[in-house]
Image (tube, rainbow over all chains, first blue to last red; front, side, top):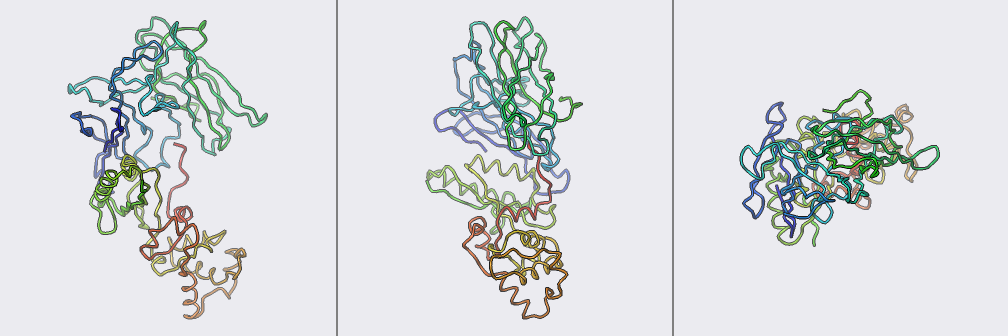
Length: 264
Length: 207
């Protein structure tokens, strides 16, 4: 099911694998589907899941750039509900997954922010709109001469049973393939301090080596979940100009109470 | 813009598309939304239910239900209203609490009676009988069960209880949140309280 923005080539679509019985294995959990977008001849290829997969497709062509880096070529696709699982929610992963491309305001003005990019494994079918196996990410430009003050912000509310518990953060990121040297990503967190009643600000650097594809890196700083009802704020930003330059691409962040957990 | 509140009641997986009678599947809603959107009603808030069977495996299971609700979201559903009730045996007999009595301890007892067993139903009935006429808090369940006066003894008493329990009351929030139940001549309960009794799941995770 797809709908188009009233005056922009931006679509939201949901695809789902439905079944007629609750008998185990009566239907597949996922399938690759082709969707004809409304009023176009575009055949979009994406993955459908039993629990539904909701995507935003931005097909606008733009020559604008995001902080000195040419904007990702259209079309770009973002999945909004990747963390939904096919089981009862009680059994869902206890780890909090934040898709980096879904920062606060990433869909402002009815289109994807220019910092959002999409990478595809390959166009095996020759279809430009084939998104079978894709990665969407946010691009943070920290090149000389660019505006380095932009912060990508994320918020989530921990469950009450985790209030005050230790938390560990992982980041899936890489240096831009054109980078010649290591680049530094700053992860900023804001946490309320229940003792003093203030909000604490902390910044931790994550070093990304050039020529290395997507890797999970642990943010070497212990965190604590906020109190019940309070938001946990995370920000991604450039380091100060004297600490490094380069372009960073971030795919995902994970917060977990499990110290031994390693995302894959 | 008129703001429709269509119903999407899929009591079992095999009816997710076609539906049956009053159980509207997605095919019916697709036709409805097609004409509504064409008329300018781009948003709506459907009443939804994934089934009311006591045996959870007869209802639409969470993943399939999630997929269906996402489709409704693309059609313009701003939010969903749970139309959750129970056609269980106790419910069919008409032991339904008037919304103004659904408070404090009584709520929990009556939720059990609609979902679980006849024994729980009798607790519910007897508790109604002991309610003060004013707005006071009902006695605790343990105290109540120990009192011999709280055992229904005659058919006339049972009839009185039934009349009390099925007395319609449209003045509360329940009338707004479960209007579909009214349409089908069923009883009332506030959505949140009612859902808590029929769901078998513990609390959900933050994700």
